[in-house]
Amino acid sequence: MLKNFIKQLRITEEELQEELQKYSNITVHTKGDFIIKNDEYIKVLKIVLRGKVRVYQDNEDREILIYYLNDMETCTLSLSACFEDCKSTVNAIVEEDCAILNIPVRFVKDWNFKYKSWNTFTTNTFRESYNHLINQYSNLAFQPLKDRLFDYLVSKASNFIVKKSHQQLARELGTTREVVSRLLKTIEKENKVKLGLKEIIILDKN
Image (tube, helix red, strand yellow):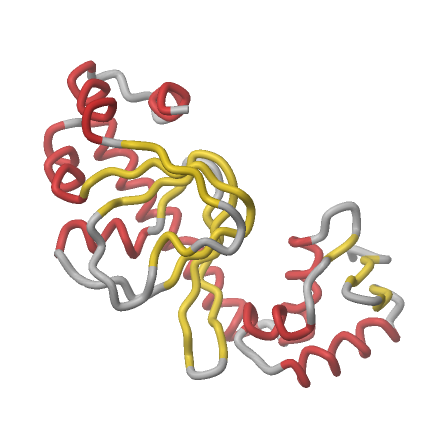
C-alpha cells in the first residue's frame, strides 16, 4: 500500500521514498475507531490509504460534520497542527474499515521544504480543503436545510438506500433529530424518499 501511495502522489525523490519506508508505518482500523481526538496534541500525521473517515467537531449535544476523508487524503486541520505543535480541534472516526499511513510530525514540516512532491501534496490538501469549506459555508448560508438534507441523503446513498438514523443525520448536519424527522416527512410527501425501518430509500434524485 505504501508503494501505491508513493505512485499516486508521484513521489519521484528516491530519498523521500526511503524516508517514508523507514519512518512511517501502516495501521489497520475498524468502524468506530477514533484516529484523532479533540484536544489532544497531534504527534502523527495520519493519511487514509484505504477506507473512509469522518471528521467532525462536538458542540454540546451536537456533532458538526467538517468533511469525510477518503483514499489518499489527510485531515487539513491535523496537517496544519504539524507546523505549529498545537492540539487537535476535531475528532476523526472510522466510518469504513481503514488502512492508515502514520508519519511522525517531526518529518512533515522538513519534507515540505526538502521535497517538491511532498510540498505539492500539502499544498493541494490545503487548497482542496479550503474549497470544500467555502462550498460548505455557502450551502449553510444560502441553501435551505431541507435541500441540504436531501442532497446529503443522495450523496450518502448506496443503491438508493441510506442506512442512517434520524439522530445520526441530525448530528452530521448540525441540527436536531426533531427537525430532521419533520423535514424527512415533508420530503416523503414530495415523493422523493420513502421512510423505512432504519433506512431511507431515495425515489427521485432530482
